[in-house]
Image 1 (tube, rainbow, N blue to C red):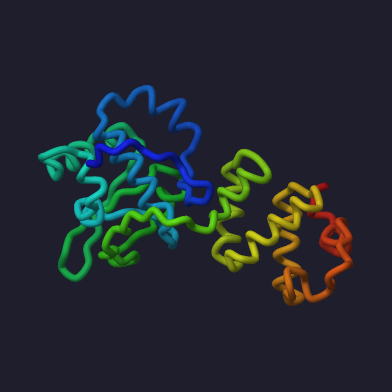
Image 2 (image 1 turned 180 degrees about the horizontal axis):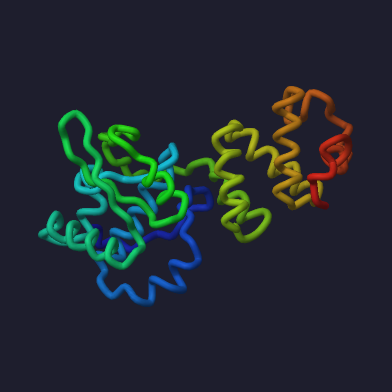
Length: 235
């Protein structure tokens, strides 16, 4: 564990969404630092996963040097105890998967979507990830779509977060960043407006930051709310 003073958060970085209910309902009740660290790490590790059930396996957590470094000397035992506490509290749910004659415990945020996906699991429906934990890094990164939304529009809601996550998978990061810049420049600070920019670029072709239908010099701020899709865009 580093003893150096934290230098602060950079302007451009990735984010992990945490539900507000965690802070109002669970955080006041968690008095074990290990349980708190492990619970937050489950959020962190499951978020970038894809598929109907987003989870992190015990082997992934047990191999995560960053997490273990914060759990003290007997880190493996502390990890077990913290996972048990988080599961008993209801913040985290667990399931045992069987694959290639191996048994693996997986952990996931206790949400309706994850519980529905877990209930449908049979046999080897979801392969257990054996990927190594991501290496920590300090380099300046392109801000992800959540950071751009909060910096340019406002606080995230769960519904908007789901839409942003879908958009992040469908559109190139450079397009998303440019669409945010264009919307802000036109004072159209709305996710629906930004989504229309991206949809137009995808449908009509994108040239030099504009959709194929429009050229530089024709920056009509209402162009994305005209036509057959205009009713879905809020001013």
